[in-house]
Image (tube, rainbow, N blue to C red; front, top):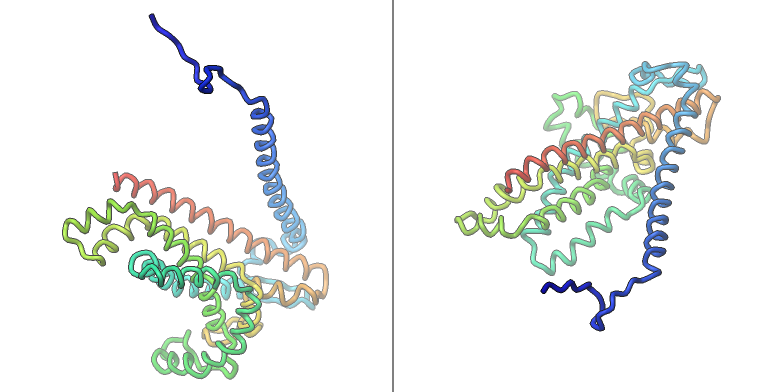
Length: 325
C-alpha cells in the first residue's frame, strides 16, 4: 500500500500563508516600479539632450564632429579638436591606469599579507570616492607644478624628437596633466574590479597548477590572468567611460586652450570641459544647442563603450568557460 504525505508542519497539517501572495505581489510591484523609473529617467535624459541639440544638428549635421572651428560670435561651431583632446586624455589615462590597476589588483588578491590587504584595499576604494573637484584642485596646486618642473623637462630631453613631447610650458596646465589626473581617477575602478575578479578564480585551478610545480608567477600568468581576461577588459572599458565624461577635474588642469597643438604639454580643452566652461556664458541659442550636441556625442561614446565592454566580456567569457571545463 502506498501512502502520499504532503509536506507541512510536524503536526501533519499543510499550512498556507495567506499573506505570502500579497507580499510577493508588493515586492514584485516595487521592483518593477524601480526598474520603470530607471528606464523613464534614461529616456528623459536622452530626449532632452537630443531635443536641445536639434538646432545644431540641423545646422551643421555630421560634419560638426570633425570640423574644428569654434567661434560662438560668428555662429560657427565644430567639435573636432575637443573630441581629439578627449580621446587623447582618455586613452592616455587608460594606457597608464590599466597595467597599474591590474598590478594593484594582483597584489591585493594574490601577494599581499592579510593585514596589508585589509589596510590598502579600502584606501584604493576611497580614492574613487574623492570628489573630482578636489582632485582637480590638487592637480592645479601640486601636480601641475611638479609636471612642469620634472616630467616635462625629462620627457622633452629624452623624447623631444617626437612632436608630442614638445617644449615645456610655464604653468604645467596641459593635456598631459589632464591625462595624469584622469589616470588617478581611473586606477581605483580597474584595481577594485580586477581584485574581485582575481579573488573569484576557483581555488582548485590554482592548487592544481601549483601541484604540477608552477611557481606563483606561473599560476598568475597561466591561470589567473587568462581566466579573468574578459572581466579585466570590461573593467578597463568601464574606466575609459569614466574618463571620457569627466569634466570638472579636467577643466581645472587642462589649461583651457582654444586650439589643439601637436604637443601634449600644450593646453587644450575636451568636450566635457568645454561644456562646463561655457554653459553659463552663452552667446546665442545656437551656442547652447552646440553644447548639447557635444553632450550627445559624449553620450553616444559612453553607450558604445559599455556595449563593446559587454560584447567582449560575453564572447571571451564563453570561450574561457569552455576552456575551464
